Image (cartoon, rainbow, N blue to C red; front, side, top):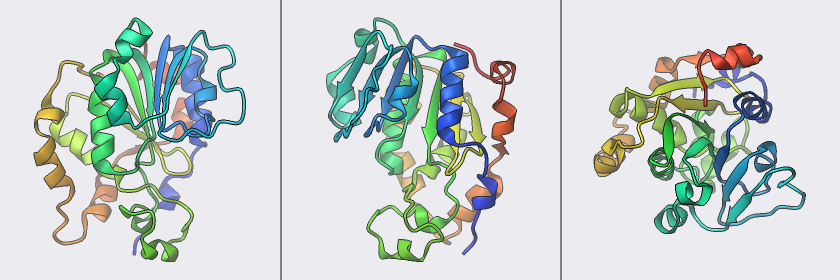
Amino acid sequence: MAQYYNRVQGENYYSLLQRFHRVLEPATYLEIGSRSGESVALSACSTIAIDPGFNIASNVIRTKPTCHFYQCTSDHFFSKYDPTAIFGQPIDMAFLDGMHLSEFLLRDFYNTERHSKKNSVVMIHDCLPGEELISLRSSTDPRRESAQRPDWWTGDVWKILPVLKKHRNDLKIIAIDADPTGLICITNLNPSSNVLRDDYNKILTEMNEDLDGGAFDKFWSDVSIVPTSNFQTKEDIWKHFWI
């Protein structure tokens, strides 16, 4: 079984996420899948953190003017709350690291996008898994024991990339080789787009079709990856993103 770990050996994604915060200076930040709060701690602006089971043991609020914690699933959050109303303005930057299943991430993306601006930045974790065995849909699948990194589990969220490129080619998508499992940065959003929501069931069928068992390797043959070394300075980042 092919492995692709050598293509995801850039700077750690936490460091890159911290640099994006520092350079872009978002006024509002939404995060799905916060758990320990380690990545929430990187933001200095008004923040919404969503997780069904927080385990925070340190001061992650720091200098934030406001920080809202919602201990629930992201689906529940978006069905009950309006982040634009909570912030008093749209989301500037978001980090999606919630449930590691492609259909959950699809919903997280389109729900986040509709509360964003055209030039907002949505960052997604775990979409460049180094081998198929760590991207199995179940975290308890016994086949994971044969993986090079059996302690890693990304789920099948990598499928979101081909979906967005096919159904939303208006988006600007950059796949970055951030260690250990990549960081996807998306901008040129369209908050009024209903394509992903309207075609949800059709897209789910597409994501679960793999008749010849070669979808994962095809994904890696098609994906274009940019090194983290291309995002070291504010000038590097400003070439692609602004808020």
